[in-house]
Image 1: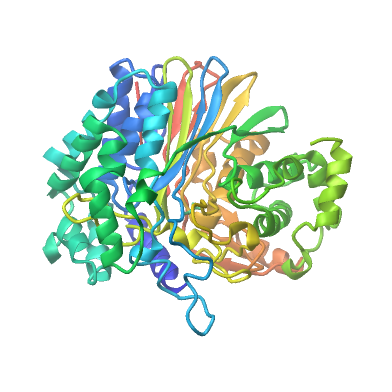
Image 2 (image 1 turned 90 degrees about the horizontal axis):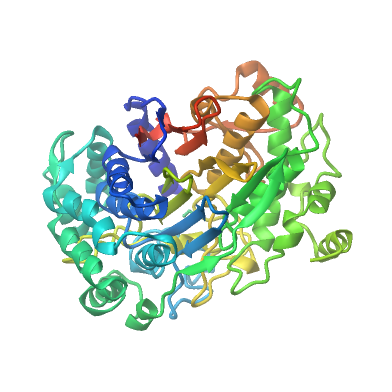
Length: 568
Ligand code: GLY
C-alpha cells in the first residue's frame, strides 16, 4: 500500500501544474489520448485512409514511445471495437501469469504478503500481450499494413520528441525511485542527468525493437533476440519467465458485454476485466432511481452511487476472474433480477456498512438463475473515424513504469501486473482491492482487471466512447461520466472534468477527489452513516461523444493529466 500512496501523491503534484486543453470538434476523425504526439499518430493514419482500428494501433505504439509510464510493449490491455456496420468485438491482450507462477509466490515465510515482490522486479511481470493484441486487431479489422501504422511510433522513437513538463517531472521521479534498476535509469533518466521540459527524448533501442516488430510481427517480439532478452532480464531481477511462456502467448477475441441504460445500449469489456460487468450491473441498480429532482453531488446522489458501488465491488471480490480458469456468472450478474435482488436491502437514508454487504452466495445466484429463466497507471484513448467506427482502448504496465525492469538493449519496460492477482484471499492488493479464489494465481491465467473501455450507443450508432486509467477507480469514473451525461445532461467536457468520488466496498469509505464534496454535504453523508476520505485527483477519462447539433464528434480530454485531443 505504501508504494501506491507515494505514486498517488506524485501524480497529483504533476497534474496540478498542467493546463487543460478544451474539447475539439471534427467530422472526419477524432483521437483523444494522453499526449499530443500520440493523437497526431492516430490522425496521420486516419488521414492516410486508415480506419479507427488502424489509428488505434498507431496510437498504442506511439504511446509506447511517448508515455513510458503506461504506454507499452511490455504490458497489456483491452481494445473494444464497434464498427459502423454493426460488428463489435473485444480484444483481450491482458498479461498472463507465466507457467512457473505459483499460488503463494508473493507470500513470505511468515505467511504475510510481500510488500514489494509483486510490485518491483521480474517476479512482478506477467507475460506481455500488447504486440499480439495489436496484431490481432489489425488482422481482424484493420485496413492498412503493419508497416504503415507503426511508422509514426518508429519516427517518434528514432527522431525523438519534446519532453513535456509532466513527463520531465515523472522521469525525474523515476530517477530517484529506480536506483536498483540501472538499465531503466540509463534509458529513461540519462543516468541521472535530469530531463528538463523541452529536452528532446530519443530512444534508439526502442526504435530498433519497433522496427523488428514492424518487419516480423509477433515473431519479432515473442521469439528470437527480444524474447531471449526478456527472459534474461526477468531472471536477473528475481523472476522467472520462459521462452515458451512468450512463444505461447495469445491475444483473444471475446464477445463484448452488453447492457441497457435508459434507452442507451452499453458495450463494455468482459472478463478478465471486472470493468464491464461491474459498470453494467451498477447502471442496472441505478436505473429504477430517478435523479430528476436530485441535485448533482448532493448527499442523496452520492449516497445512491456509493451504495450501488459497494454492492458491485463486493461481488467483484468473489465472482470475477479469468473466465478461462474460473466460471464467472456473467449472465447472472448482468441481469436486471440481480440488480433488483442486490438493492433489496438498500436504504435511501442510511449507509449499509460494508461488513454487512456480503458478496452474493451460491443460493442467491441460483435464485437469480431461476428468475432469469436462462442463462495508478494505465492509460485510455478513444478513436472515431469518418465512417463512424469507434474504438476504445485501455492499456497499462499497471503502476507507473511497471516493474521498473527495462529489457537491456531493447528499450522497453516490463509490467508489474502480477499485483492485480489476489496474492492471498482477503488481503488487499496495492489498490486496496480484495479478491478470492476466482482471482488466485495460476500458471497461464490472466489477472483480474478493472479496465473498462466502453462504447455507449443510441439508435444503433456509437454515441459515447470512453474509458479511464485509475486502478480500482476506473469503473466508477466511467460510471460517473455516463451518469453525468445521461442523467444530468452535461456537455462531454463538463462530464469528464466534473469532480468524482469512489466507493469500492472495502475500505468502507467514500473516497473523493478535490472539490468533489462540500463540507455541508460531507456532514449530511456522515449523518447517513458514511465515512469519507479526501484523495488526490484520479483518472483520465478521454472520451468522444456524438454531437447532436452538427452531427460530428466532440472529443474531450481529461484535464487531470493534461490529456489531448485532435480532430479534423
Ligand atoms: N492494472 C490495473 C487494472 O488492470 O485494473
